[in-house]
Image 1 (cartoon, rainbow, N blue to C red):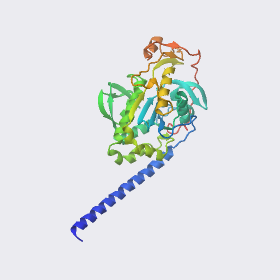
Image 2 (cartoon, rainbow, N blue to C red):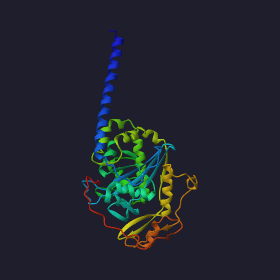
Image 3 (tube, helix red, strand yellow):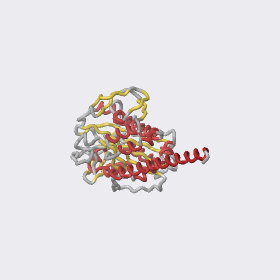
Image 4 (cartoon, rainbow, N blue to C red):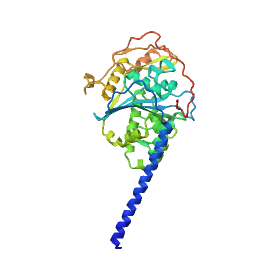
Length: 374
């Protein structure tokens, strides 16, 4: 056999072996992902039926404050974010929900108002999904719940992320307040520091906290575009093992990952709220102004193709609440001056609620598996 033919045959053999090796690797990771997702797969019955025709999808992403190590007794959603994806308009909308928002809870075991973080405590993801659907009059097509451990492990598995800290602050870790320091500016962080950054709200407020969480999601999207993601696939999948609860199937997740690069080029919209704080039964609450909820609901429904655009969707429109509110404070936590300083109303506040409408029930002690409520 001629030397040239031998070289060609050798090259073909090497290419074939590489192809087989790569195929085997992806086959194994696909199987690993399928098993991991099957362990965390938890379909629910939600009350709002989606009317979309596959042009749009909505997701409720939740982060839990409990794990086997923390053993808090009650499990709440420390973070809640609605994400809508509109393929027709090529637009992604983010909306973070303040964890202390005082809202009607939609759960079979509870009737009344509570902090929105507590919906999960009563009936797990079904209560959280149905509470959000009722509050904003939108369908939630899919949900995903992470605990702190999965967040840390996932960020570490992808090699950390880059964030831009607007102002220096001391953050919180499992070791308590002030256990970690953030300098102002752009920096690369690991999972522990990313979690502290995502949870920070004392240096500003819950709204800015939501923006930080949205920043992290977009930073993760950027990192997943790098070549290092492929070699770290097994670690990434392992970070979800026993640390995730979702109704997203393996095929649906793979489709989302496959189209991830396309979604990165979509227009990004960030929604936020006008709100006020009030104290109730020795706890601080957040009231989202009713007209602010109505505005955000409209924007979410437009993003899902349910509502048509109107004057509120013009580029120069800026929403400001009329200041009408529903819940009176008992001043068991804050005094009137402190609450006025927290209010985001430009026009003052006007009470339009019903006296006594702030009554709440006790948070139950529930059995959890690694922080997850069935």
